[in-house]
View (spheres, rainbow, N blue to C red):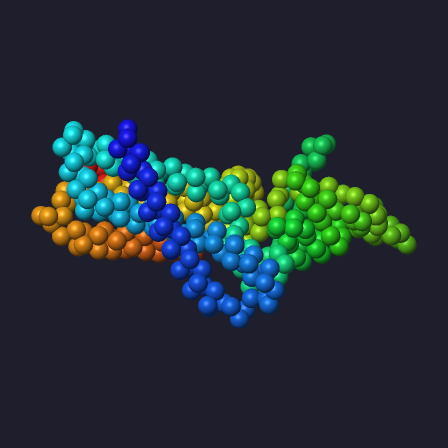
Length: 356
């Protein structure tokens, strides 16, 4: 137990050092590139660096787990701790288990963070560069089918001139109701706000087609409503995902979006790829740790430890790069998410188990 705690402390220390270094390097390079685009306000720049740090940590955590494991294992070999552990009866499983389970726990913790606003860090950082208070989408048009309390089916074609997902606000609202193949009503409003369950339209104006058209009678009836509730369950980020303009959203909204879009017969391919990228992609790090441990030399006296470290880091970078490239190809729709994201992780798991 004491040896497991000893190995865990070494691994956590190296992981923290490597992650801090990688994130700092990422932030410095990024800041040098976009410094001129940032607003002059110091507070805004600090906020940008904060969001960029969160985004960098989500990308670089798997690499930090791998590099931390390589440094930990090399230290055990260099200090002859590994031979000492084997001599007192420790098995390979006993040595690598603390590192593996810590890597799995950190991976699960990172996935859990995607149920919070942590998932929106990249989008918020980008909105600051664009000098926009909050990211917005323009000219959204979609269809929404509902069933009234009387069992009547209605089809609405809805237009938002602007949507602010984080602010939960829509501007320039237009709703067109179709019945029996004819335009039945039009709803016009300047604003709509999402209250957590549905959209609330204030000062809405209804334009109805008259059912009984008579000579010298009005063909259109106009009614004004102080408040109108529509689009139950259509969250702001879900609306944005219909047009697949971004892949930044948390897991809770992701599940809701996939469920809702399936019901409305929209394509959910990109949403599924984003889901795989959150819950599947990061697990390549714990799996690769087991594989790297399999080829770890027992002693630095009879093997080239520096060569092992160089090879392990190179394999880690190449694996991460290939998987990341496949992920990007899946997000663009070039290949299916199951093939580009899930299958490589499954193959890596099979390959690791085969060598173990």
